[in-house]
Image (cartoon, rainbow over all chains, first blue to last red; front, side, top):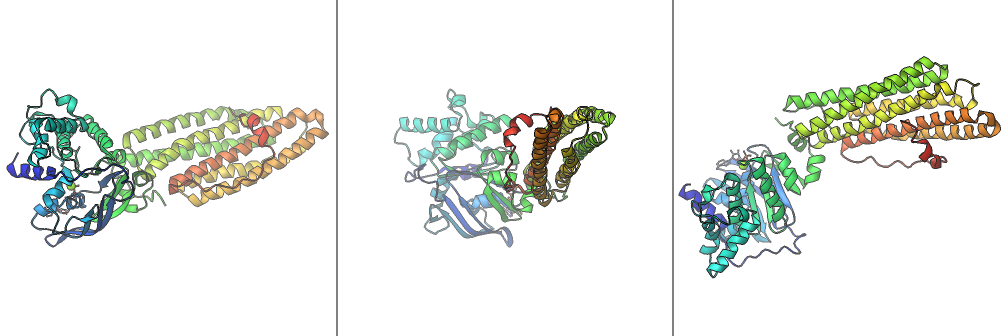
Length: 279
Length: 243
Ligand SMILES: Nc1ncnc2c1ncn2[C@@H]1O[C@H](COP(=O)(O)OP(=O)(O)OP(=O)(O)O)[C@@H](O)[C@H]1O
Ligand SMILES: [Mg+2]
C-alpha cells in the first residue's frame, strides 16, 4: 500500500473523545441533511442541486448508473472531496445541525464522526490489532492497555470478525482474505465510534459469502450508526437498505422507501434503471 | 402505463416475458372457450360437446403448470424488479385463477347429461345471457392484462355486478319453481349449481382484474361496494363445487 493511501485511510478513522453515539430518540431528526448541493470538477458539474436527508434509523442506499455521481456525493458528506484540488462543492451539508463546510469545522474530527469504507479493502500493513488500535491510540481514546484491548475486541466483535482473528491478532492485516480485510476496515471505522459510516461499493471485490457477511454486519450496525452505502448490486440495495436514492447524470431523481423504489418507483428513469432497461 | 414497450438490456428476459404473455393469453382463451362450449352443450343437450369440454380441461391444467414453472424460473434467474416483478407475480396468480375458471366450465359441462332428461325449466332461459356476460368478463380481464389496462380492469370489476344480479334473479326463480314443482327439485338444483358456477366465474374474472390493476399501477384496486347477496349463506356449500 502506498503511503498516501494510508494517510487517507487514517484520516477517516480519526476522532476526538467528545463524540458519542446516541441510539435513542433519534428516529425523527435527520442525522445529516444536504441542501442544494452542487459539485464541480473544474468547470464540469458532477452533482446538480441535490438535497437529501440521512436518518439514524435506516440504511440508505445510493444507486445509479456508472458516472452518475454517487461516489462524488458520498465524498461530500465527510469532505473527502477536499483532497481533490479541482473539486468545488457548494450548498449546505449539515451534521446534527452543524455545517460541515463551515470554517470552524475541524475536518479531521469530521472524518472521524463520518467514517468511510472503500471499495477495495485497505488495511494498514500492520498487525490486525494495530489496524484497530491505531485510531483510538493516536487520539488518546484509551487510557491504558486494558482499555485499548477492550476497544479492539469490541470493534472486532461488532464487525463480526473477532471469532476468526482472536488467536492471531499479531498477524498482518493484509494476510486476511478480502472479505475479512473489508470487515477489518469496518472494525477500524467503528473503533473511533463514528456517527455515520459511508460505504462505497464495499462488497464489489467480495464473493457471495463474504458479501453476505458484510450485509449481515450492516444489518447489525443499523440504528447504532447512520449508514450510507453505494452499490451497483440492485439486490444488495434491496436487501440492506430501508431508504434508496437513485442518481442519474448528477441529479437525485428519486428518493424513498426501498420497498417502494423496487416495487413501484414513481419515476420512469428509476424504473428503467432498476428493471434493466437502461441504456 | 407500465411496461410501455422499452426493451430490457438482457434480451432473454424479454423473450421469457413475451412467452409468458403468450401463454396467459392462451390459457385465457381456452377457458373462455370452455365456458362458451359448456353453455352451448347445455342449450343443445349436446353430450359430445360437453365431453369435449371435460377432456380439454386437461390442456388448461397443463398450461397452468407450464406458466407457473416458467414464472418461477424467470423470477429466480432474472430477479425482476418494479413493474416486471409485479407482472410476474400477477402472471403466477392469474394462471391459478384462470385454471379455476376452466374447472367451473368443466363442472357445468359435467351437469349437461343431468339436465337433459326431463323437460326444460323456465329459469334456464336466463342462463345464456348470464354466461355471455361472465365469459365477456373473463375475456376483458385478460385483454386488460395483455394491454396493462387498469381502466378496463376497473370496468370488469364493476360489470361483475350484472352477473351477481343475474344469479340472484335465477336463485329466486329456481326456489319459486322448486316450491311450485317439487318433482323438479333435483333438476332445478343442477340449474342452481350451474348459475352458481357462472357467478363464481365472474368473481374470478374480477380477481384477475384486481391483479391486472396491481400489475399496471402498483396499487391495490379500490374496493368495489358489493350489492347484497341473499345467497351468501349458500356459498360455503356451493362454491366448493368446482374440482
Ligand atoms: N477526481 C475527479 N476529477 C475529475 N472528474 C471526476 C473525478 N471524480 C469523478 N469525476 C467525474 O464526475 C462524475 C461522477 O463520478 P463519480 O465517480 O462520482 O460517479 P459514480 O456514480 O460513483 O460512478 P461509479 O458507479 O462508476 O463509481 C463522472 O463524470 C466522473 O468522470
Ligand atoms: Mg463510484
